[in-house]
Image (cartoon, rainbow, N blue to C red; front, side, top):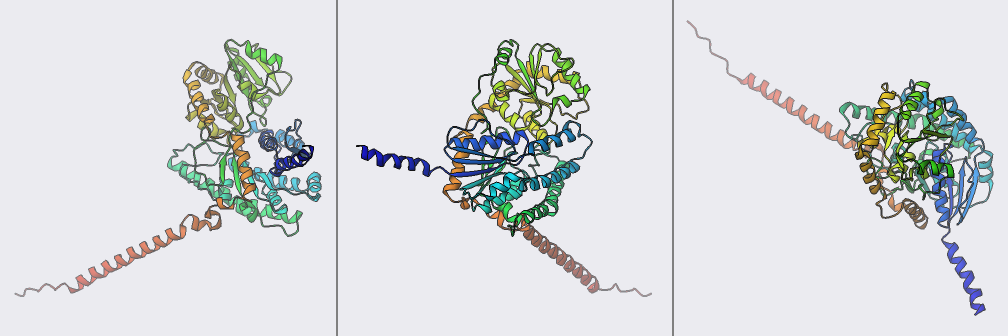
Amino acid sequence: MWCRLIIIIPLCISCTTVDSARILGVFPMAAQSHYILGNALMKGLAEAGHNVTMISPHEEKDPPKNGSYTDVVLTGFVEDFNKILKEMNLLDNKNQSMIKTMLNFFNLTIKLNEDFLKNENVEKFLESDQKFDVIIVEQFLVDTVKIFGHIYNAPVIVFSSLGANPWINNAVGNPSPLSYISPANSDFSEQMSFFERLGNVFMYLFFNVIDYFFYFPNQNKILKKYFSDPPDIYDLFYNVSLVLINSHESLNQPVPFVPKMVQIGGFHIRPPKTLPGDLQKFLDDAKEGVIYFSLGSNLRSKNLPPQKRDAFLTAFSKLKQRVLWKWEDEDLPGKPPNVKIAKWFPQQDILAHPNVKLFITHCGLLSTTETVFHGVPILAIPVFADQHRNAEIATHSGYALSLPYEDPSFSEVKLSGMLQELLTNPQYTDNIKKRSQLFHDRPLKPMDSAVYWVEYVIRTKGAHHLGVAAVKIPWYIYHSLDVISFITIIFSLSIYVLFISIRKIVICCKSQKPKEKIKLN
């Protein structure tokens, strides 16, 4: 019997480790919201029993119990990012055009790519003799990192924190009609007017010009600077086996997806934890309910100008409800007694509490996802990037009101009116509950879906059969411009020939017309 056990135990161990894949995640963005998503994905894969290595600016304080989780920390990235945020002050960016903002953003990404490849921990990592079965990278203007797929001869999975967008669509040949789909940083609705569609076309052309004449050439220069004979950036850009998208139809505009694209929106949301004692009591004792107010991880409430800050304070002082305000300072001058401040709150756990009646948010995608998950209506204060689009979708879906940060009518009176409408009109709560139901109604939990598709790419050695032909043909053929041009030329020639023929016939008829006889006296 013991002999049999000695033989069986090693076999069982080998069976459990055969399916354990070696997965490398590369998430260079230092923004906390980006790290939350990347970290949740990689921890989920580790919990599924895989050996995970994650390159990011942050260090994991609570590694998963299953599998294996290794951090490669991009030292200095968080400090540099916080410095940039302080210099930019996103709450005071109203006079800068979208084009200038995007150009500055592209310049920052060039620096990010360079900083990543010359980071000492990345250099040490590349010198180590490691093997990986799949590489997962975040598609956020850091395309040089896709060279890891080439280095380790492994399929590349792309993660999109912003849902479907032009960079993702172009990489996998996903259709994105400009007639009703606009960029994530636009607040155009699905039903665009003629001039909005015209603007949408110009934005599309602008971003493509920037990509192909500025961004990609610079990425190529960086690759050649740090690697000998690297692949062309265009080859790396299109070398995508799968796209994991942080979106879902209950949150985002329904759009087309090619087979390589899988929606996993909400995968980062975990079961609620017990709140700290004082916070639990604050929420439990709130008989009239609680309003939770946070502008996310990149925006700072403490940077609000006095006029807007006082508008919130005055509006809150008139409420029966209690308010939790994420305020990044020790003190808040003029704070009413019903307001509790802290530099950080466990957002997911707060939104899960039944006494939370409203969420005042910048409408970042993570916050929007979490409030839909827990069924809490929102007052949106969008500031930049995809926040305006998220606010527009939430308003259109009937579970939010929106007061854009730069709105000239932003005042205590307007703020109070919106708060009263959201707190007293049950339609907003009803709509968010219905939306939450749609969010939860899926064949698989988002994280389970992510794990399945990552393992699928590994099993199929890159899932090449999922690719569409669109990425292999020139843009003018993809849009049938050659066919349209041919038809236009033939039609024009036919009209021209017809016109000339008719003209000649008319002239001929006139020349053959008998002359009138002149009557002589």
